[in-house]
Image 1 (cartoon, rainbow, N blue to C red):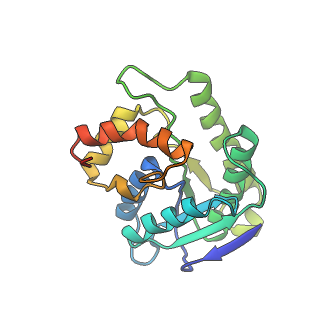
Image 2: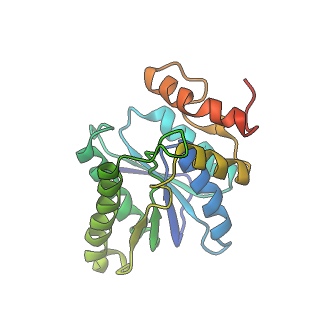
Image 3: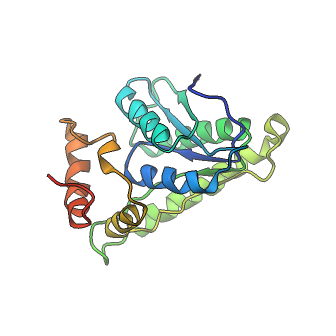
Length: 206
């Protein structure tokens, strides 16, 4: 596991960023919740091959003048449940080590229509994973002095339309998301998921 810092912080709040729209929204909210003595920390965790995503997460942090740190996990991959658990656990320990009592995990698997809710088993798995990893991190409080550490999932039950509405209320710029202007298959899927909604809320023009 390798740590890199753009700025050292004693944050009381951390955001686990994947540089997507939900992470961008979480950064905007965290910037309002933080304070001068303990600004919110933006934390990225992933494989070294995800350099474009890491750079986008750093840019989003810079946009809100928030400290940024990266945790590199060689060979962890993305997309599988075990990889997600590994990322969340590593991010949780790093957030607690840096003084955070709360790690915001902006996971948001919802669909595009108001009635198109996340698949309940997936939603429940995300909530359970956050709770279990919270307990694991808090269990080792002697190493980080954060026995009250928790991982929150404020966006887990939002549809895509609700997320777009929240993004519009906060006035965030979706062009800072990792997928904007990228030509990979995954980036195109994310662009197709969000661009129409962003247009409908006046956040982008294409």
